[in-house]
Length: 286
Image (cartoon, rainbow, N blue to C red; front, side):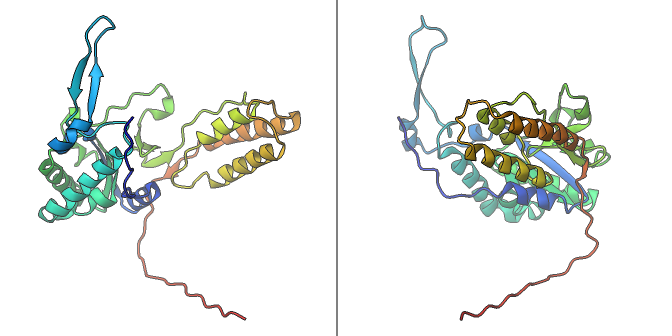
């Protein structure tokens, strides 16, 4: 068994990326194609990455040496993100509108950038393509709320093609876990909640599915965590049925929570002017 260190944290917080993208009128998202498979490791380290493979139980085992960073290892995310940071450090100065994008606006292989004008966003797109090309990274699944200018500059096969059986997803795409309607430029939550939860394990499973990176569902999540705390205080085992009183409260919460999934949250936060405000506090010890 191979044990690998995870390496220091390089990943920018997901909330920071989403918050910054909300301050621009136009945004653009793109995915790096098979990022892990585009990063080679040193030849002297490849001897530690061997796998056995056969197409059927009757075939002989074949041994392969993997030349790229590999899925499933603790160090893989760090190595991939570290390569993006190095690419920005080495070649970012050649693409001024793309400088800092790989370090501040990328979440693993997803990139989200914005601009206040469509023309500037288009120029940023060209710089990002040029910078990624220096590292032999290809891009796909482009999407933007600037369909007239930015998306028209892309090949149709490189644009995102989202298929969903939910009618609410007709014009929406996933952006870092959130549903983004590119036509109305709104964020939404599309999660189905099962009201059949009757054990502590099932309740926790429902709460864990409430992904809220922008904090819009904060009051709901706080209530759900407090309810989970009450289940712990009841000293219930994971698969013990919860009491009828608690079950009635939980079902009422699930019923009301479904209304939250009809919310439409504006993606763009217009900021006409800004100023630097500092809050200073002083305290004295007695």
